[in-house]
Amino acid sequence: MKKFVFLFFLINIALFCFAGETVWVYESNGVRTAHDLSMIDSLSFVTPKCVSLSPSEKNLPSTGGRFSLNINTDGPWTATVSDPTALILSKTSGKGNETINVSAFANTDNKPYTETVTVELNDGTKAHLKVNVSVDDEYVYSDIPDPYWPPFVSKIIEKQGGTFETQVSSNTYWTARCSESWVHISPSSGKYDGKVKVTVDSNKDADDKYATIYFEAMGGTSISRSIVCGDRISVSPTTKKIRFEGGSFDVAVTSNTEWTASSNKSWASVSIEQGTGDALFVINVASGVDKAKADTAIVTCTTTLGKSAAVTIYRAEYTGAGENVTDINGSSYSTVWIGGQNWMAENLRCDKYDTESEAYNASWLTDNTIPTSEWYTDTPYYTDASDKSKWDKDYDYYDNLTDAQVKKLGYLYNWAAAVGVADGYDYGTKPFSGNRQGICPNGWHVPSRAEWQTLYDYIYSDKSLTSNEVGKYLKTTSGWYDEGEPEEYPQGLDSYGFAALPAGHGYGSSVSSVGGITFFWTATPDEVHSYSAYTRHLDYDNDYLDGCGDYKGYGQSVRCLKD
Image 1: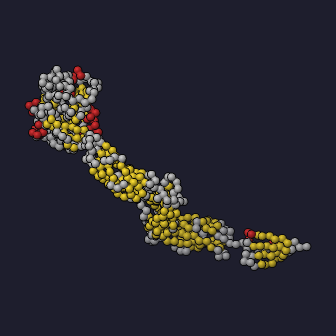
Image 2 (image 1 turned 60 degrees about the horizontal axis):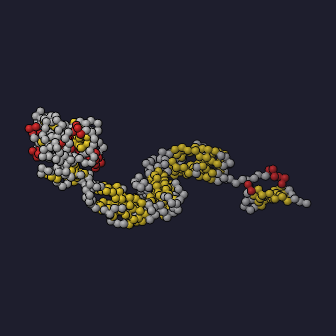
Image 3 (image 1 turned 120 degrees about the vertical axis):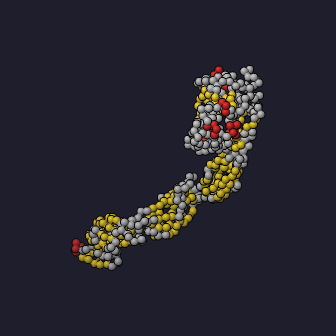
């Protein structure tokens, strides 16, 4: 009885059928051949031939280069190149798996070139390696905007996704890819200029999704462009300073969806209340009412999904000319508003305390008039800084002042006379509670140290200063000179109309440094020394508004501040 054995030998892609001592070999082409089983040892099995190369494509810069090529096969092979003047192989034949070197010459042309390495087996089976060599000064660009501008993304896609095209420009081969799988690029490679379609899947997350698209030339030159999928909105500017008188300015909205605009203050209104995508609208700011008060408004632009961007508007306190004020003697003074403070724009020249002053009808006064005394005493006194007979004759620089300026120099007061106390020393170091009217007209007062600091801080901020240059914005534009020197030093700018003049100061029985310096009393006594009070001063040779403690008996100017 014959035994039949069926063996499926899949590796050789043939079916062997054994019947007794006969084997039938079924080849893959369907032909059946009979063989004597006794001859099985001498039967030659023909295996299918295959070969693969790694890499199968190689991109090189214009300088060319050398790299390794892995040949994967179990049979004999030969290797050739398409252009021996462009490529050189370290070995052109072999058997089985092997690694050879491929060298590519530099590209001296203005176009990229592509050559091929072919590895062939004895039966004609082939595998190919493509070698791409770029050009010198290769480039690749995309018309997607560069990301280095607010909101720091190149492309904004609505939350539901979408498709857009970008123009790629290059002088060589290039590839395009994305960092995220929810962005699809087609085609992903090209040569020279071409269009690329970018498809973005919808964003089902609550937060924005970000991705980066890379465009790379074959020599390694690359650019990247970032995209975001989600509602986006931004505004420019985000802050705006407006004068007290009001005004208007444009706001640019950058968005990829519908939005609304609204203000939290009635004095800041918008020209349009809703829009779609990029747009421009106007914010109108009405004039303020209270000159001493600054205010802030916020205009907010909000998308349908709740994302928002805002413009913060700072409407300043009033700065400009104020109404004139008259003292008890009938002298009129111009005034100026600076950062919400209403200052006299001239030095005080009054010798009587007004009806609401703390010193009015004081027992140590006669007819509420300040007694004229010697400079070295501390009882209340004043002197007329414009009286040249009292000016220190060691210096003649006061002649540089015009007659009009001399008339505005005002009186010089010791601290007791300025704040309206009988004796500065006896008063001591305790600060006054609230405003101190002193020698100022009703409704006005001698400014405190803190109120002078407020003036300093406003100018420092308003002029965007980085050092103490506040003084030059307060000093007059002429009249400041060195003692005894004809040379004129840099004058002030008087940017706010404060018109600070170099009235000098009193020592003993005379006035010195007229034309070169000025001191202003504050109502704040020194916290430690009973003989001293705080003052502010300006000099001819610098732009500072300085402060220090000074002897209460010295004669200094007074600038009154409105209550």
